[in-house]
Length: 119
Image (cartoon, rainbow, N blue to C red; front, side, top):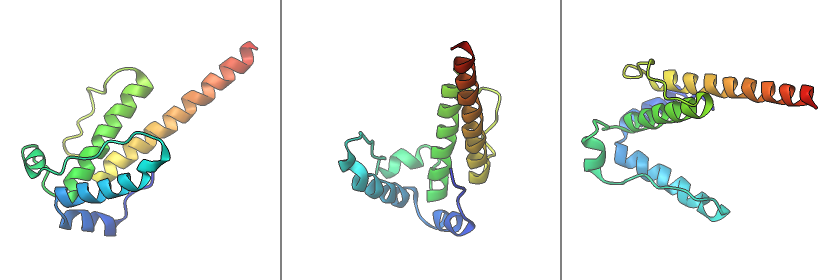
């Protein structure tokens, strides 16, 4: 996963969560013809404001933290209940996701080596 640039972070701070959702949905709709199933983000202001998600940055951070938790569960077969993500920045979340990608690659490598040593 590539880290978000400072210019993109500034842009995310300057737009609303709805505007960012619409941007993401437009990208998703462009890819929707490839045969995969995609889900669109809600475009309802109350959905975001009731969760304290006001800016595009807040929304992207929320998505990234959810991705971290989903990846952690997929990799370790349990939810990470010890990491406090409440003070994370987008860079913190992206770095944590990158670390999980690295851990997953290591696990795949271990599985390949174990399988090959059994054969």
